[in-house]
Image 1 (tube, helix red, strand yellow):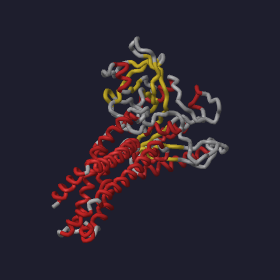
Image 2 (spheres, helix red, strand yellow; image 1 turned 30 degrees about the horizontal axis):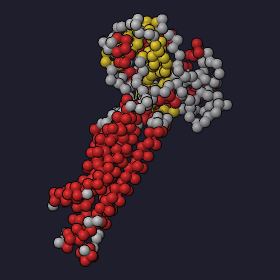
Image 3 (cartoon, one colour; image 1 turned 45 degrees about the vertical axis):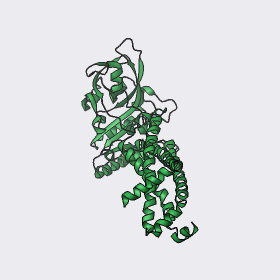
Image 4 (cartoon, helix red, strand yellow; image 1 turned 90 degrees about the vertical axis):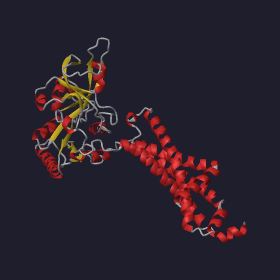
Length: 439
């Protein structure tokens, strides 16, 4: 019987090509627009390090004077050198890394290439294992290299292709200004989306790279300071801070991430931050009561509203458009089904139940959804291709994944079934005697 109903649905759609095409087009356009927007939103709001994000925490303290406008009560995003080093030396986390955003003047080994500035991330050794950084060649520096100010560097695949033609460059010399550093590692296929460790720097006005490529150069903290590489942004009370002695100022310019593998350790570390703030207040460095934050990756990204607002707005608008398309499809199906009232009367007179009529017409709506889903999938692919070619820092991340394919088909089917419920119900409620008498 089900096969028979499917044949009836196919014949009905074939007999009214214009009306059928309009319904398929409405479903396809609505699904294509909504799924394109939803796919982009899913890619931008996903977990950057699945399985590890819940163990990685961003640390904040509040050393500001009482006269400083407290705003929404949030402590500064960046931290002073004194506070970052004190917490680092406490060794109360499984792993910990301080970092800042900078640029470095690169002198290529090829004299035919002009010098250029490379986006640089300055950090400590735990950064790489803590954030599961994958390497194509070599590996990270050691903790001992942090303390010895080792002249070593890790570079991106992009920079490796530019300077060393993509070959294994471990042991090669990377010249930064007048300084020569040894390449010890080349980062491979590693690009969290978003670049969560950059998000605090962006919130502090030190970076604009939430969805861009990973940095070209990674340097040990003390080495970079010896090379006099300055942070891209500084949170300072003084209008003219002494940039040559940032380590002794009360300016915020460092970011601190810690890894804590249990909720108990996170609670203990939060107590450490409170106790540290009280201690610094007692010696006169801090003036406010303890105001600390310890947020894991996903909580931080949510609180900082890392996903662009225009992407969320586009998604809501697209689903509103899908709703309009469903309503239009309801009207078209209603007109189509009611025009066949005589057919329904005949079938009812020969013993067809209301349930059978309902299933028959719902299957016809389902057929519209399946065909519309196929075209909607093509429109989704085209929409994502268009998004990839827009001037956005996240454009290169956009792609059509299997999850989006399956979701597109499911949404198309659900939309068509939703659109078919009212028309199918109205069709099965037609009194057969009245229709036969009128005809």
